[in-house]
Length: 227
Image (cartoon, rainbow, N blue to C red; front, side, top):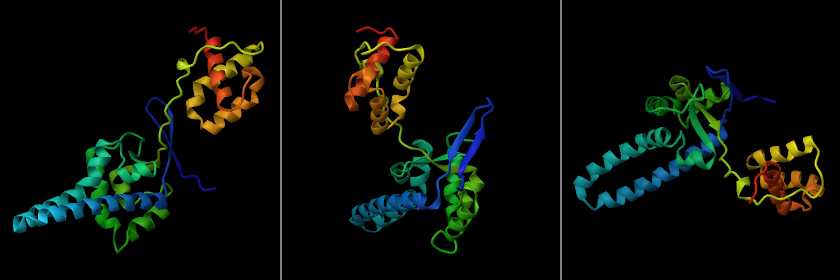
């Protein structure tokens, strides 16, 4: 299997794993952004078209700002995500995993004029297919990388669950397992939470979503939290 995960080590010795995004999701994100920009330009054309020659001049300025400023502003101010990238859970970061800055965003987007050659992003596509981390020329020059960045799940607040005594005595390792589940539950999907909760249904005395809630309550009880 082709490994597209880039491992970066911080000065503190922490290993960061950056899952590089391939050309297909990036192309879809670009099409979404193109649709948004085209819609904005159509609205601007209609509005400034009512102002005659003066409006035409203003429209050219707006055209330039939307075409060049749209990706730079979103990437620099919104964590490396344009609306299209956010919809596809993608993010632009520096090659070392740090947030992208204004200059890097400007350079990578300015290089699109080269990546577009000879047509249809041909140069960018060939480069991304040849590069182990699917970088186009703009990313190489700017020192950036487009990665998969799944949306963060809203943590399930175990503290909001009333403490509940377990239905049966628990050994030390079982107590640690229940507490670990409560600490990591927000990192799991609802289906996975319920799957794990069903395994220890005798402890919680319930299954499904109710079993998960009861496990969180038991964790609070084991930690000495009392309502």
